[in-house]
Image (cartoon, one colour):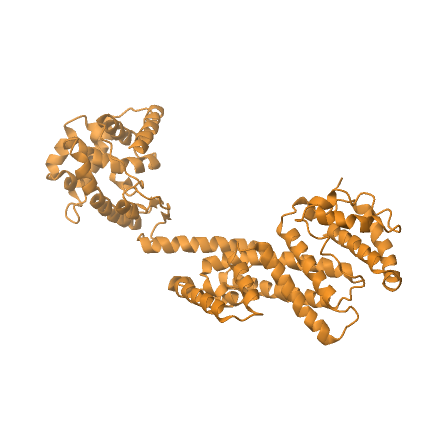
Length: 353
Length: 159
């Protein structure tokens, strides 16, 4: 109820903006269309107003004409194909009349509004003829059938017509759900089947295509390839090459003879707060041959993240210096200083990384 | 101060987490063996261990947020110690998943390649195509990070 009130308010605003001058000609057009609506398809599936009203066609037309004719004439049939997902039946006749009036005024210019209005205006007519109190039960019972029939008509019109109107086909499922559950709005394009299975499949396919696009962006050189099979082949090749690269690099790292003793455990723990770092401080402070390194490194920076925010220019310079120092270390220096150099080198590595 | 270290920008990024763990494991491996040996067998053994360490660090960096990392962690855990209990329980789960995973519609058009991809991505056998693509994207991203980090380490320690 509330959503309908909201939509009716918007529609009333639009009526003000559109300017509601109903010419007699327009009303005649609509009555002609109504005639066609009522008389033509009664034979096949009785999905017209008359089924709703349970009256023979001419009397229905009379009923249409009896009150203010512009108000009650529904939107033109060619645009009937679309349904809004959730239907709320207004029991407030004032709102109903406003809806009907707007549906007449908007004509064929405003498809989206008509889409909203057409089902409700149909029900409007039914409501106004019957007692307002009894309408909810009856209209809700008749509404699913009406929807289904009109959906069938919509399907036919979809295939027949040359227009490019899109229809919301979630009404199929929503009519059974009856405005309870949220659902996905899927637009069925012209000529496509609208049953729930194909809808779900189409949604899946679109999801898969979206993910394929992401993958294409990830894998270099995949953008130019068209065709999903080739793209998949390219992706497979890329994954294989990456795995092989990992293997190759690990082989390389195994073969590298670490000239320094790796003692990086204690230094590389960023999670363990300050305690481990404190234990490192004396060892780092000790060696006299690395004075420039200790300049800014070892204070609180270790505590949080142990990626140094040291400057890069000294890093490059330091690297060369360190390399010169490495080889003598292996032979001459003791474990402590080798550990220090290892930690310092690890720092530099971190900085590079 | 300019921050040249990209890992400092986001210390909890995948790259920095992986780097931390991997370096730690690497140092452990290097500390275990005597540094003088360079026989091929020794190197091969080390290589296996380093490879495992790399995969393990990557999987641990991702935790259980992705299916492939969970599958990889499970594989790493059950490989050394083959306890029958764990295997049968997990195999049952895998079987349940495989029966429900692939529908006829998904197979159409992607049959051969999807199976190959499933073999490549850990844990891919029990996923439908949609999730498989999602996992593949994340797996590729993690693999590239791994390769970059390892490349930098290798370049650093070799002359």
